[in-house]
Length: 423
Ligand SMILES: [Zn+2]
Image (tube, rainbow, N blue to C red; front, side, top):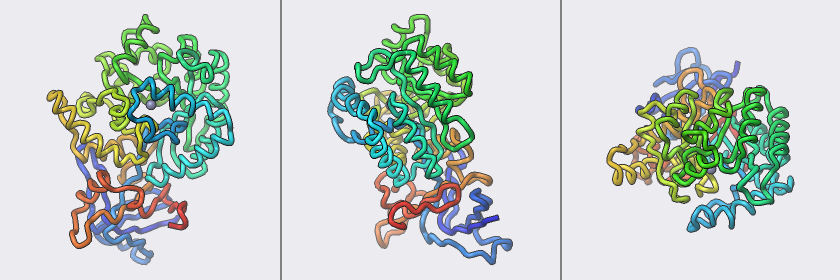
């Protein structure tokens, strides 16, 4: 058995409301799993060497539940466009480039390194309609031991010609992707209808059959804007709400259901999500950039829905989920200002969404409770020299003004990651 002892200021979410802080503490990691945290090294481990991070914060790695991998190169570009122009000018031409596997390798390789750099070790990603590009991303994530869901996108209507599949082709290629990637690995395939308006009823029904055949979950956009809901329900006129489109197709029954944005859910949407144990993914930067609104995150959480955070790159412009934790607090204050019935989030609540809340989709990660896998980051250098701060203050400051340069060590499943010139 391999045992590591680490020393530092250890912080993780004990619950959605409470941070657990162990200042100047020791943690034992046995075969990649957290064994315990103590103020002194326990007798059993006394002879072992200690990896000492001093006043470094040791925290769980982050989870990003909504990324468009194919939009990696367009982050921070065209942000003054309205959604339709942005899709036409930037997103759709960019996504069409992924028919070229060499392009996909270059972009997806860079994306995976950037996720690791920013401490995101668990992610749910959309690719494009292209099989080979999606296959490359799957294995690139697996190679680093990341935990992830990867979905080949489905679009058979209301899409530009160069990104539209026939229904048969979309189902055939999706089934091939799911069949060839299903298994017990840390990266799993997931069904990914872009959203209801770009998918015919026949396609949705066929995806439901694939979900049942392979025990597969779904990721998509839900209640992203009032226009999206209206358009979706015009096309699916027998459905009473957005979530019902996916529920009726049998897409909520066989694996996780991960829904981005969920800004205007109806009571029936929430009921269906609750029944299925769906995750609502809050992407504050992105829904501001695309002028979609702000998820009522605190209220949805109080109503019992599971919430996580996403960057929604390239709708969002930055890769760090830690920044989305800060932005979730900011956005909730704006929401409360205009709609006082929505209370704002506290920082511990936002940090929970960035770690344990999202991590639940990927197994025992996102926390340091005993038995959790040690996917972790060490954060240093956020204090002003000569002005020491408490661990909880350093954690909050990192999320607000820190960046990847403050992440000085990364561990995946207990193994130290040496990606960046040995650092
Ligand atoms: Zn999105």
